[in-house]
Length: 366
Image (tube, rainbow, N blue to C red):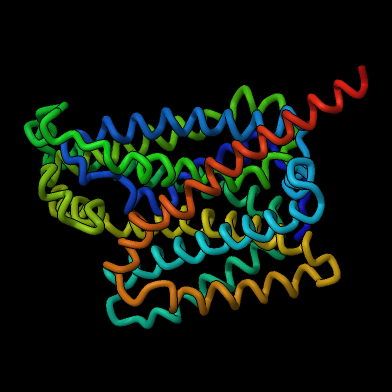
């Protein structure tokens, strides 16, 4: 993986597409019904705080690469163990997002296509991106970002123009009787907590000062898009109906028709999801592969990439037997037992250990 420096604009486009990821289809929190905008707003605000926390974690230690940060905190041996765990975590989430993509395509557009075909083509594309390196993916994200924003803008524009949105569907704006915060862990870990993967990528930014000044824009932009899309879905379908669908965005867009000419705009959803899904899986895969390459430097990077590519290809078949099981594991089990330790507990422990070691060095210096 030929990693060089990336610009702040490239990082913002990467982060925005990454955060939209499978959230644009699955993570709109419509089970909260009319209160979805409250949940999404609160999650986005938490996402901004998480961004500054992850950036500060690197900043206070001099912007080291991720494997060096872990060595600073845990020492060389234990640091490599933690690095392997993080790499496996990144690769596992890459498999989960790939599976999201496979189910979305087969459940909404190509009913008769075999899962392995989509998985094989996707893995080949992701491995090719990893071989080219982070810089190539970052440059590609600049183009994909403009294309994705254009697609989402068209969807929003035609939703208003078609006249199928009902203002009464989004009322009451706040319904305290059904406001449920028991799933707050799920709301903040997916997608915003997944920014922990950018601990691997932030060090390769060419201007770290601009990261602290402008990086948060990606979190706010993705949050605004998710809030807007969720409210449009509710305005079209109604809160209770929208909560029943696995892919409510597709169902809402299917209803858009203008002058009998403009219709079947759900294809735009497919294009948008393909783009953001590719970026998200690529980032997780590249980050996981980088970690493995640091632990096993004797192995060639291309060998590691293709080996891990084969692993996520076969992993996509054993990760879940059907869509309900996949959604249950991804939304109920993974947030509590995987996301929380890797997104919150370990980063806080890294901050504490590096702070303690820094204080110890200061005392010795004095």
